[in-house]
Length: 331
Image 1 (cartoon, rainbow, N blue to C red):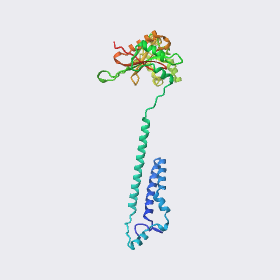
Image 2 (spheres, helix red, strand yellow):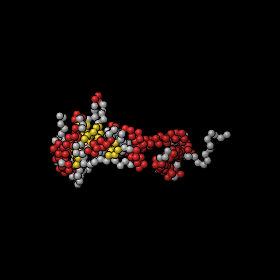
Image 3 (cartoon, rainbow, N blue to C red):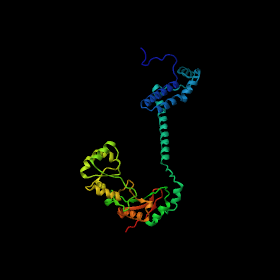
Image 4 (cartoon, rainbow, N blue to C red):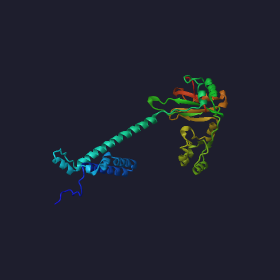
């Protein structure tokens, strides 16, 4: 009757060799798991670490005659030397697993440190580069001062550096808190007495127009006006017009029983406005070539469209030029 473990043929393995085999077995299992998960890079790293193990190199380079075997240990013990307790394979596996756990913990800490360094680099603010012409113009503006309308318009002319006739815009920052702390939607309509210098393309909804948009997937107009009766038919092209902001909407006044009259008003200077996600309203009030009188009247109409109690601040600027803080009169 043999023992429960098959008899090993040839020479018996040393403790170092058994430890090495245990480490290689764990490394092979870890490599297989990583490859199965698709993490090829980490699997190759584990394999390289196993191959480059100092213990493995020491055992392979050691002359066979210098290796200590259980037989030589027994002989030395008989000569009176101390005989250490033999460690079974389970103990060797436990030690190898502990070393592997320590290595993994070290790798995780290195990854966390690298990730933290990357986040720190990303969080660093980027420097905004400005042209020499912009820096020269903004030096003329006192950012701590609030300019009257005549002063602001004069500065707009001095600080504009465009090679074309730029558009003059007023940017109004509105307050968002309404009654009981609720946020109110900021939108409305403004009538500019002198227009913006650009006539928008206004179209009236019809069955023929709906079919054309449905077929070509294009909207060759800036504003579409519809009657309430045609709104169900417009549902056919809602996915085309909606994302580009050209779908008629009763909230914006583009659904009416008098589309022809509304078209004339829009072409004459009627504009819809709405605060963006940053609580800002952007009004184009005309071209710089309009002159001070027309720009002043258009600016007054734009400022009057927003209740003064909701205005936090306002800035006037040209298409290519710095912003000029405006003085807002409460009365």
